[in-house]
Length: 327
Image 1 (cartoon, helix red, strand yellow):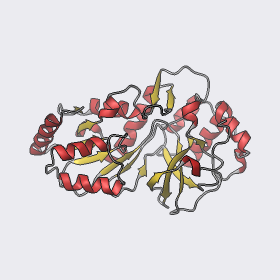
Image 2: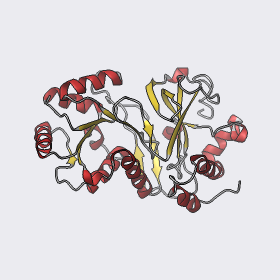
Image 3: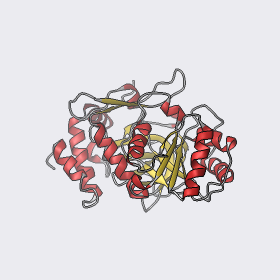
Image 4: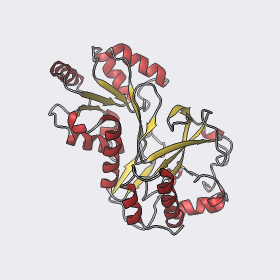
């Protein structure tokens, strides 16, 4: 296959719904395996390359220690992960912010329609308190497109958030309350109320603010506090340009530019059968300028329809073979 250039691939990605995902994936792989020195070195040292039936994922930890780039360019922004004191954080260099924001919007629209029709209320205190959050950038774009003046961010002003939610319900507005897990729990304890009809979406993460809960426990507490039948979820991370969404059953469905598969815990180059537990690997075609093939540190199961669930985080000591090149 002749290696396509960046502009050709971007044109193909604009036709994501028309072309087979595998064709786009192959094009991106050929581009990055030749234009991303880190990924190229990983493929050479691992001996994987084109020998596997799939495109192997670069261990996500390299975003903490290396500048991951496909092609030669200067970053105009940098996404960074949150972390506790002394913890090394990930850095995702951004060549073109519009590529990220446009893709995030298309992903949201695939599940919820255009944000102009929503009142979007964002409770993301830990993200607003620092620079470089990809989640904040995405939600800012969604809020900017909302045609309702109530939309906006709420830091710790729970009284105002409560009043806004009550007003939106009274007016019959289509409302989305999106928040990091610990902040939603704080709000649930401060202002339990009937929010039936409101979509509540958690984005994960206690960030050391509260006791860690399973997703089942978290959702039950939020359902009890707000009187809703389901809690929605968003799966995204600093190292990705694409997201996945769960509409209430804790089963995530990827957006059009994203696919997920699993590999063995003790062998990063051995695929796991559908429905079996393994390490989640993400193919994110929107990560064209960095790396689209990433092995995460999440444990999960992937099902025949492409949906997946998260079972927890992988203990670094359990991951065998994925430390190639780290030293």
